[in-house]
Image (cartoon, rainbow, N blue to C red):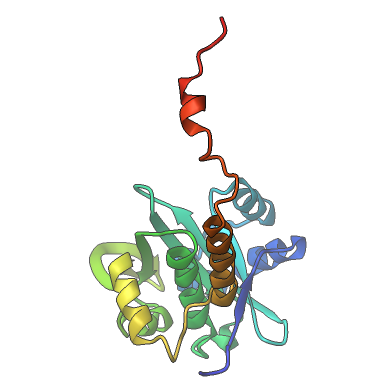
Length: 221
């Protein structure tokens, strides 16, 4: 199994300032996301995260350096999410940490939050994201023509998605190389089920006892 390039964590107060700095107008990172002229303020990112409207997670290297951010938000029907994010330092683009961060985010959505569909959109000029998406897993759903204007010309926006059955197939295929992490170890789950089964086998008092008696009770007024 290859060494991990990054991990995800909940933001701290100073992280919101980092996001604002990375995505300031005309910055390289903002340009790559297609939002070169958008104003992003730390207070707005914090409010969106804490309200649950958009959930942000910071991307850290194994030695604890914060290099980027990913996010997810609910869209459409229950179980549908849109994801986004960026690596803040252009010198780290193409190094693999961004792709791994998005893989961890997608794993989180399907494996912990019961997602059915995860959507990703990117500009047609973003070669780093295109390299990740065209390797497989995500399916191209559409092209929004002339969506972005950058460097004197128009560019399309591409829409991609992955469904639960596609995620499961990929997780099974790459289980040895890129296992999906559990929050609770499987051995602990097995131990808990064993303890419960042993308890129930002894016919102990449970809420099931006396059910008929309780069901027959009548209100005293």
